[in-house]
Image (cartoon, rainbow, N blue to C red):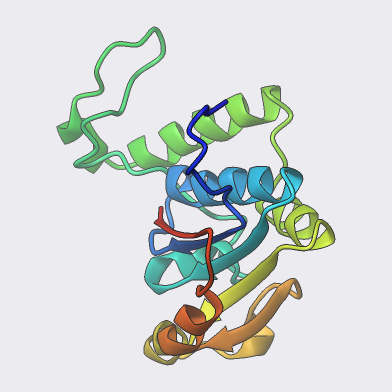
Length: 168
């Protein structure tokens, strides 16, 4: 707890998710849900490959990044040789192990997280530019997505004292 009397409390958090890997999507969902649970106004904006998290056909097919991920660890904490990630089946195997670990922790699925966030008052948006790039329509998205916005419209929502924009 801060003792700085000049510090203002966080009132609103706006998160931008631009990557579609398990670790990036779940970072956004966990932090977004945490903000909702703390009573902080929460808005999540999914763009580029982050759209996979809110696209019905992709949301349950997320993978972890194995190539070029210097923080990747094997069971037991040993470093994961990034080059192994190019071998057929390695990414799928690592993703399956990660999903299994998440299940052991009783981690909600992506769609359950989306429902929890909106049930708590959070809002979920998709990026119009990315939607147009990937030729997606609003009906391709999970029903918890409130709207498809331009980045300008998203920034308009981000105003106000005590607001943070977080790029996950």
